[in-house]
Length: 305
Image 1 (cartoon, one colour):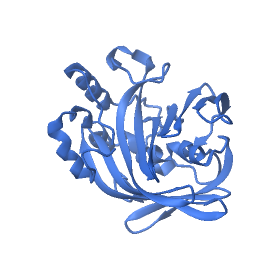
Image 2 (image 1 turned 135 degrees about the vertical axis):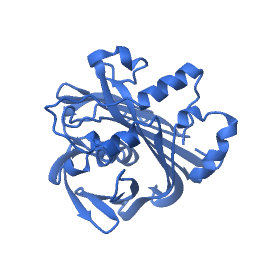
Image 3 (image 1 turned 90 degrees about the vertical axis):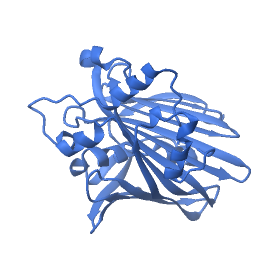
Image 4 (image 1 turned 30 degrees about the vertical axis):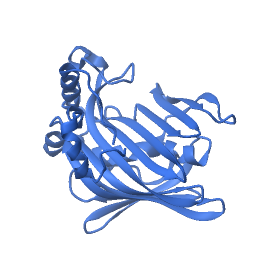
């Protein structure tokens, strides 16, 4: 987990206020989970949900132990600039409330570590804003670093990529406005009853394409859903990969874990994350040494990330 270093009380209050921001609604909207009292009580209480997972990450043909963190929080976002608003009360029509997911993975390959982070900004009011506005991904390891960003502009996603690999280099391109693998976790938390099922066109996740060094382009996949006694299983079947997500049946529909099955170097491999601990807190205000003990609540040491 990354601890945000705030430089003033004012900055803390700004962050807290944005977390409490309520979504924009109109009477003509089709309602969903995001309009319910339960949703508002949980997601607009000025707190974030921080989930720590035990990670079994495939890399270079071997599996490595690690940690994954999913942080979900609502905040006020600029529709024009695609950044968190410092003064949402003055933004007028430029303000949209989003569910922000910060997703980190940390693992070690031999002598050197990987640190990866994905951020996804999905509007809360699904009927008014049906598409995720922005996705960013950064990956750092001892060989170098990579950064990618996707922004929804009109009816297309503008994508920029920066890499230390010669064959990738710096790229800029766009693709059609379609379903994103990277927005699936947010949609499960926001509006699980309206996730499209069946054969769909989908843009694969930035973590997966990064580690596989694959071109980012739309592909066909089949999305299915199975209800069990205490959990719901979502499956995304790609041509050569299967993503399975386990979700608690009851609100707030916590992500219990996920698994990817794929072929790497002619060998069947998998990556798996299993939920360990959850902390429901305004973590951005817990940046002093006196709060280090809270990392124990997530099964994290004082020094790992």
